[in-house]
Every structure is written in structure tokens, then in C-alpha cells.
Length: 109
Image 1 (cartoon, rainbow, N blue to C red):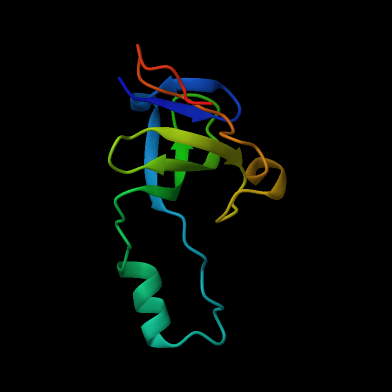
Image 2 (cartoon, one colour; image 1 turned 135 degrees about the vertical axis):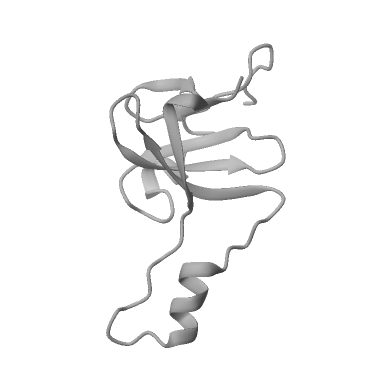
């Protein structure tokens, strides 16, 4: 079972959430080139490792939030509210942030 750390509700089962996608900064509407829009809309990095994503808690608080997830292990390191592409300074300063792990696997410290 994968637990997603909702900043409002705490760790919940992944079935309560909708994965929105990789968190990317939107280009400026007035000055963006067609290539920048193509990259924003269609290209994703798909790294093997830690990535920052946007999630929606559809069966709980109905909040959009950012989370840092390891794409190989599906382990979450931290999460934060808001529409920011990267964690706010207060969350980024935390060592581990709001954590969740699979049953029987203790969170790292």
C-alpha cells in the first residue's frame, strides 16, 4: 500500500488521490515561443529518482498540493500546500518534511 502525505489530512491511501503530474513552471503567456509551449505541454523529464509533482486529494480535503516523490520506490519525502512548483523555504528547510512510507518500512530520518 502506498501512503501519500497530504499536508492537511496526513498520510492516506493513494486511492484517495489523483496524480496531476510533474510540477513545471508555466511560461509567460505574452512572450513564450511555440517551442516553450510545446515543452511545457508535452515534454516531461521522467527521471529515476526524486521528482516534484502536483497531487489532488479528491476523496479528502480536495486540496491541490506539491509533493516530492521517488519515482522508483514511490516513497514520499515531503509535501506542501499551494500551487508552487518548488517547496516553500520553510518546507525546503525541513529534513524529510511530511513523510509517508509503506507498512513495515520505517521512514528515514
